[in-house]
Length: 183
Image (cartoon, rainbow, N blue to C red):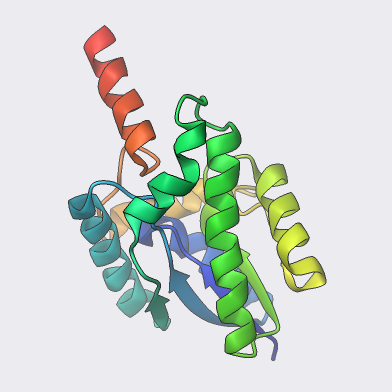
């Protein structure tokens, strides 16, 4: 059985991704690495939701370091970029590079990410970045296909998991707040 390290952005997104990979007969371990999430209280809420999903799904998840200030330093040149622009590309890259490093350290066969479950994320771009980092060791997936996003939403609702209402970074939070004030 081939081993896959799955980068997990939050508990909600993990559900159908894990289901699909298990149906493909992969042995899975999760990796929660999201230094982009702001503020820290939001990070904790998402981590707690993932802990609940860990129990429900019987999956082991390790946690990377939360270094939001390093993430901001890395991405601040792109702070004015629109959602889905260069800043998001850099953010995907940071998280996939760290997942690749851990995959190598743990001698896993492959790595992939739950990021493609979101209808708000560019799966083509995420897969391109993953392939650039890991070559054939990156499992290219578009988890939102075949009702993947719908399924993950149903399961998170069934289990009462916290669902966030913005991507996670300070810039997407500011945009969410700005759009509320414009109504």
